[in-house]
Image (cartoon, rainbow over all chains, first blue to last red; front, side, top):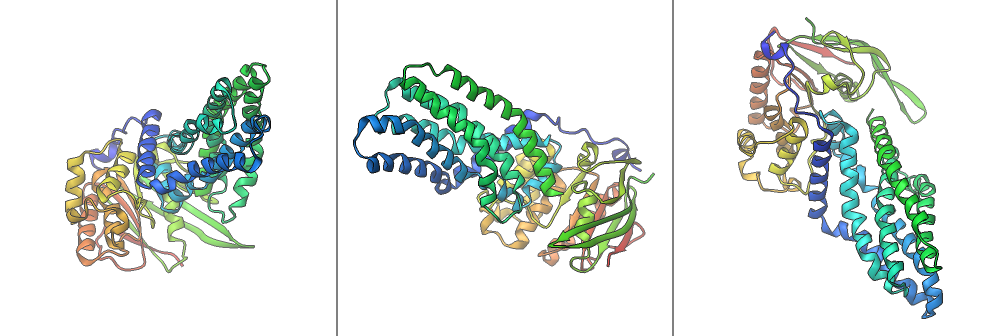
Amino acid sequence: MTAAQAAPRPLPAPGAWRGAAWAVRRDLRLALRSKAELGVQLLFYVIVATLVPLGVGPDSVLLRALGPGVLWVAALLASLLALPRLFAMDFADGTLEQMTLSPYPLPALISGKIAAHWLATGLPLVAASPLLGLQFGLGGDELTVLALGLLLGTPTLSLMGAVGAALTLGLRNGALLALLVLPLYVPILIFGAGAVDAVRTGLGATAELSLLAAALMASLVGATLAAAAAVRMALD
Amino acid sequence: MTLLALERVSKSQWRGRHEIVVLDDVSFELDAGELVAIFGQRAAGKTTLLRIAAGLSHAAQGTLSWRGVAVAPLDAELRAAVTYIGHAAALKDELTAEENLASQTSLHAGSADSGAIARALGLWSLDRQRALPARALSMGQRRRIGLARLALVPRPLWILDEPAAALDAAGLSLLCGMIVAHLAQGGMAIIATHQDIGLSGPSVRGLALS
């Protein structure tokens, strides 16, 4: 036995942050290389939020009442649209296998993937929402709360969706993912749209926004660990 | 001292409603400088055995030991000692050959030195494909990118699943040379293959699966 065998080689410091940074960098680069796919969610969001006012008609009271709900439902469905791609490609081409074997902790790599996924698919929705809210005649405060709510809510959707995406890896049935994830999305939808309504009716939105922030904090920890466990199960 | 040991490993998988025994009571040991070549037909359980040895999947029965200690799947010490190259090359079609190799290397080794990446690509005669997206590469070239990682990420145990598949004669002799050098330095390798890749010697053992 040689010296190299006797002492295990020094590991690259398996830092969680470096692992997450690796995954963020790689996934963002991949997302930017396939811009057509990247735009699909945003396009879907813009189309729905533009067609509804046209379909409902120019009743400003009705539009203002419908606006928050429609914008949130559209954001939620746009987020769902992007979910299957989160892990499926890496699962099929063996990257996920290599990620579990790397010295970095798997939850760190997974959370990096989720962060990149949100930056590529969630953040554009948040950025576009004030502009789309104008089409429903929402005022300044309502638009601020809408964007703030989406800023807190869409990462939660990505995180909880990631658990569903990891659990349904290798299954052909795409509808299962939606069935699994939608019940988890419902509270986020209720509080998100409720926050804008609360501002419109003159109540403060603090309670709803705090709940959205709490859900984000809880899923930041819980969902990454659950998704990593589900990925390990899928590979076994 | 035996470094890696699989003892009486069994595993079965569900195919629809039928449970099929994939591995039945397989054992082998591996010491520094040794190679185990696993032969067998398609669906003989070669990949399953390699995945268990790499710590990727768990054995239904039997134990996997590393440095004399029984380890669970995805054990941190075993993970840090293994390079596993499976069927899938883990390449991204959108990235170039160089970016793919750099990305894989930094995933496993923490960082990737661009000079070393360029040398490894040169060694596997991928100079001209360096800036091509992986989708434009042939199967053999994709396989070469995967194998180029062996020189960049120093690990004592190589686990290679059909490394000779899609590889031409020049690539095969390069691979064999690397394996011989690896064994000479006290490294270990487990290789699944359905063809004879031309390695022999006292440190090479065969294991046939049926």
